[in-house]
Structures are given as C-alpha cells and as structure tokens.
Length: 189
Length: 189
DNA sequence: AGAACAACCGGAGGCACCTCCGGTTAACCT
DNA sequence: AGGTTAACCGGAGGTGCCTCCGGTTGTTCT
Image (tube, rainbow over all chains, first blue to last red; front, side, top):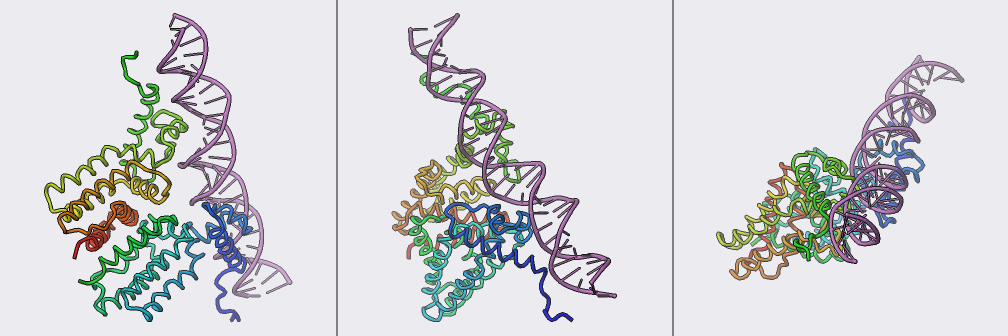
C-alpha cells in the first residue's frame, strides 16, 4: 500500500504541466501580440509534443492558466448577491466579466471557440460561468425583478459574443451599452 | 484619347481578380472545412502572391466574394419596412441576417475580425449593414415602437456577436432567443 | 511599330500550427 | 535490487499563412 494516495501520474509529467502553465501565464499577460505555443514550450524547457499532450488545444491551455482567476470571478456572483438587489448584481457582474476578459484576449478567443465549436465540450469554464449566471438569474426571478424564462447558458453566450466583438479598450463603452441593452431585455415589466 | 475610358488597370489583373473571386465563392460555399487560400490561388491558376496583392487579408477576399449577396440583404431592410411595422421588420431582418451568415462561416469570421480589429477599417460591409439597420431603427423611432437612443453600429455589433457564438445549425435556436432578447431591450415601454 | 516603364506575376522562404511515433524513463512489482 | 511496462518525451515533418522581390508583360507614348 503506497503512502501517497494515487500520485496521479509521473512526477516529471506533473512538473512539466505546471511549468507550462506558469510560462504561459507570464507570456499571455506580458505579451502584447499573439503568443507562439512553440515559444512557450521552448521556454518551459519541453518539446512541442509535450505541450500538446498536456493541452490538446490552445483553449485547454488557456483554460488551465486562468482556472484560479475564473474561480474568483464566479465566486463574486454570490458575493454581489449578498450586497445588491439581484438585477443590479447581475449588471455589476457583467462588468466584472468584461474586466476579467479585458486584459486577456486569449481568454475571449478561447471562450468563443468553446461555445461556437459546440461539440460536447462540457468545458469547465462554460459550466462555472453558467452556474454563476444562474444564481443571479434565479435570485432576480425570485425577487420578481428579472424574467424567469431565460436560460443562463444564453446569457453566457451573449456575454461572450459581446466581448468577442468589443475587444479593444476603446470599444469598452460599446460593450457597456450592449450589456445595458441586454439588461433591459432581462428586466420584468 | 482612348476609346475605353480609364481601363482601371491591366486586363490580366482584372481577369485574375475575377477568377479568384469566382473560385473562392465556389470553395467557400462548397467546402465544409476551412478553405486554404493557397488552394484557391492554385485553382485560379495564379501564384499565392497574386492573391495577396489583390486581397491583402482573408477578410478582403471574403468581402469581395459576398458583395452582391450582402447588397441584397441590405436592400431587404427597406423592402421589409414597406410591408411590416418597423419593429417587426427589424426582427425579421435579424433572421435574414442570421440566415445569410448561416451557410457562410467565413463571413461570420470576417465580420467579427472587421469589428473587433477596430482599426480605421471603414469596411464597406460594416458601412452597408449599419445603414440598413439605421433605416429600421429610425422608422421604429418615428413610429414610437422602438427606442430612439440606440446606435445602429451597436446593433450590428450585437448581431455579429450573436452569429459568432452561434455558428452551428443546432445553435440556431439559441441565436433566435438572443435576438428576441435584444428586441425586448429595443422596444419602447 | 518600337521603346520605356509602371504594374503585375509568382514562388521561395520564414514562421507557426499540430500530428505522429520511436526512444526513454519513472513507477510499480517480485 | 532488478525487471517490466505503461506513460511520457521531444522533434521531425506536412500544411497553411503571409511577405518580399527579381523577372515579366501589358500599356502608353512618340
């Protein structure tokens, strides 16, 4: 019986995986232009094959990189609900979502690919975001301020659509207007 | 004085340009997967350099290919206004827009790139679409059924966002729901 | 017609993506 | 400790994107 309970794979594999995530994180946030995955692999000291085995698609890597931050974003939904009426909380959360994406073009592309590809990609990101939105919508429906016939997945799709189109800083205002419009459609009466 | 009034460049250049458009049109609509521009050039019997000189970006080629069809789509806005109340006309036009894009993933990508890039790309496509939407919005505002404080460019961006996220046939329903939501936000009272 | 030149042609080349598979090695078992 | 093996490693290679520039040709002017 091993002392360690299921080491979950080889040690070198885990080390490489973490190294790749760290390097990618730095490259994504530092770089102003599109990051080359080959460069990430090289800087992490592994071959390109290793990178692709750990992260079969670019999106998979991006998702792993932003796992923690996305968790905080989703948690914020419940926290906002404790401080504001549901409809206001939803609107605030939308801004947080836009902020979250703002510095991470990679993330916007990844999310769009995830939704548009539409394969059975039950991605974790999509799941978490839908759950967060659902909490907000349910609270609003219970309070009577938001419509009850809206699907959380649709709102996530809408938000991803907005940020996919409004990627540049100077388009931030437009994103705000579109989210306002969305809210107008979501309110009751 | 030449009989022809300004031949607009060399004859072979024009021939090649048209050939590229024809081949690309066939390739875009026939192909199920992403089209290789190298393949288009080869099938048109020209070098890749010639293709890129005529169409500096992939978007430029796509725009040229769908010029006529897009013109018809934009004309439809005015025709719809002659047959339906403005708000209904707008909603119908949104469906036409989605249909237009449906068989042309290339077009959706091109439009998104055009809007997101946000450079001074005063593209013809963007211009025409905005004009069509503006007619619909203005008519609705005059009739009092639609809000008057909405910018046509925002609606175009929203529609492009929707179709960028709902590209697959099975996501067509979701696109419809999002457009309904958008309309709810646009109506007055 | 013939010359001169601006415009056009086309492919080689550099970069990045992603796949595939033979060699290597950490983990486990006896 | 030593053997077995499943899992991992990594880079060569095929494809597509896009640029660049020397050679070619249609057009125009005399």
